[in-house]
Image (cartoon, rainbow, N blue to C red):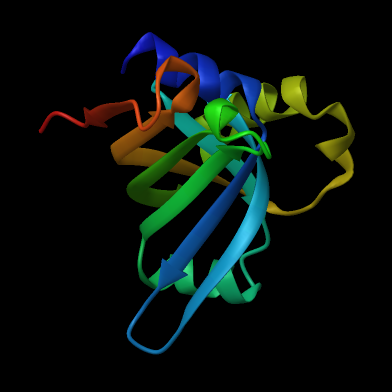
Length: 140
């Protein structure tokens, strides 16, 4: 993954996520911690929420992460596709350590820990020129 994408993901903390299955679709926003070990996002949300129920039946997700600005020349944002899975066992323990490092107050939460593994990212960065894009795809 390109360094400019990694730096952007490390600076931000809110992801807008969209999920779907054959019966339903929904969008949500979540706090995230970037996992630099495998370039993924860690989020916490309950399994029994509308989006949590959908994610359990279809792990395909899309989402966005933005740097909001009223100045067009300062707009930055990521659009992505990926897979989301609930973490368990040692992966959950390691993931929670990263999440708590970013959000210490989240220790009181009882929600599940999920990992978003990116399949594709388009990063638009107008600070480098209007419409400047960096593309990334997971290698098979």
